[in-house]
Amino acid sequence: MLRCLCCCCDLGENSERQPLLQPRSARQTCPTPSDSQNEKRIGRLTMRRVNVPELDQRFTDVAESFNEQQEHHEAMLQ
Image (cartoon, rainbow, N blue to C red; front, side, top):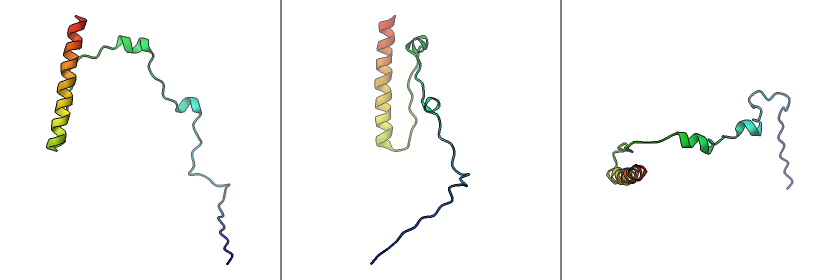
């Protein structure tokens, strides 16, 4: 048995398609090291509650660990 599938589309009218971005405009740039050195992050990490006890506890543990490490880091810098 011979089957033939044919797909016909009008290539002239393509109003829904957007032109592709140029590679340079699509790339995200990372800040240079000198930019990140000028920016000092100080503060405590706080977590939002998600109302799932197990997840809330894990997020709280992560926040406590981070805040403890942050305090130690700030103490070393002084």
